[in-house]
Each structure stands twice: as C-alpha cells, then as structure tokens.
Length: 312
Image (cartoon, rainbow, N blue to C red):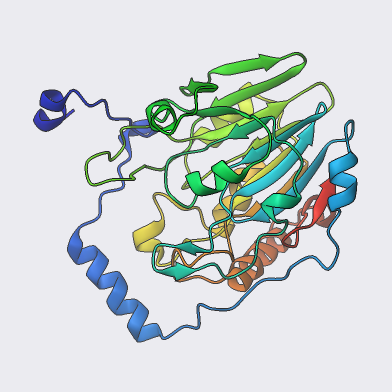
C-alpha cells in the first residue's frame, strides 16, 4: 500500500501474484496511434436473435435458463429465481454508442430477485439500468462496492471477498477470483474488488467469469467447484500488448475452459461496446478456429445471439 493510501485510509485490492495493470500515458498514446494507422471498421455489428422468448421467460418458475442481453449482462433463471449479471442497458459507454440493442428490453423482464456484480467498471455496473429493474432485488457485490450502493439508497446488499459463499435454500452463490482492476473516479482505483460468480444447485453449475485476463486462478477454481456452464469473455483484447493483463483473448478463453473442465461454453463480452480494437466477428472467428484446433466437441460451444435463450 502506498504512502498516499495509508494517509487516506483507503484499502486497495490486488490480483493473484500481485499482477498489475499499470499503463502510462505514452502507452495510451501508442494505442491511439496504432488505431489511426490500422483504420479498422469498428462499427461491425453481431446478430440479434430473430425470436425472443419473453412470454416463456416471464411465465417460467421452474426451468433453468440463460438469456444473453449483451456484453456481460445475462438474465438467468434458476431455482425459480430471476438473476441479472452486470446489469447494463446503457445506450452509450463513454464516447461510444452501443452497437447492438439489448437482447431484451429491461421493461420486458419479470421482477428481479438477485443482481450479481463482477466489478465496478461502468460497462459492468450501470446505476441508471439498476434503477429501472423491476422488483426489489438483493445485490451481491465485490467487497468495497457496498458503500456506493448505500449512497444511492440500496441497502439489501451483500459484499463478497474471493471464495465467500451465500446460501439461498438449495442455491449457492460463490464469488471467485478474476484478474482485472477497477476504477469509477479519479481517486478510487482498486478500492473495490473484482471477480466472477459461481451459481450452483444440485443439477446445475453456472460460472459467470466476469472480466478477466488469463490467470492461474482458473485451475484453482476448477479444483474447488464442479463447473458445467461457463459464461466466458472473449472480446476487448486488442491491442494485446495493452489489454492482455485484464482482457482474455479467444484462444486463452478456450484454454481456460479446458482447465475448468466445463461442459458448455457461452461467449460474452464482445460486440456490444467499443472497448478495444477487435470486433465481434473477429472474436468469434478466432474462437471457432481455436475450438477446432483443440478438437473440442462442437456441441459444447453455444454462441448465443443477442437476446437468445439457452435452456439448461
């Protein structure tokens, strides 16, 4: 902890092995120069599902389902509960406009019981979206984020450190490590934690990876949990010299999936916002190529369209 942090009393969080995501202003300038030179069309969109199962999802009280809203936002149903991960329905992210409309409009969702937050970056935690959610959800957030929820009038909150678990009857929610960082203001860098969530009951195990670079934590998580369905990021990895610590590329995402011993891979974190210099179609093409290279079962790869529902 730095002298400034000790004086301010701010607690900072760290990655496994103290891996840091430190970039200089010159690094940022180099990235922007490369972007201008490459002249890549970053406005390419990915597909929306032609059918939305809105009526079925609103009526459902027993079957497990996963619906991709876009980016890292999923609507998950399990144990009769309605769960939303990293709720972001925002039309803009920074200076960039959303590339694809949300798979299901927030007003078309039923009452939400649980919200799971992976970390505090704006593309994963959008309070205007949270305000529009129906119902009176309980929020499960990384340690350090509770105070900004409290300031906005939310009090049904549980903060989690890595490997903390919460039981809701036969459902278990566990916060697990990721390799990333956080920042929402000029002075709050890494003052809250980051990670993923494992959602388990007897027949199902869903691992929402959150936002991460490739790290040894995947092997550690596999030792502690029997992972089945993996919601894995594959985008925002270019330029890799800049992004690699915090954003996993498609090839390493497949490597992580193999280490997790999963049975279903659902890609996410691509094609919704301009966060880096890769496009959604490029990420999927690299994912497909690596899947074939590793000779994995094609039936295990579920590339959901925006708004598509996967019934477990």
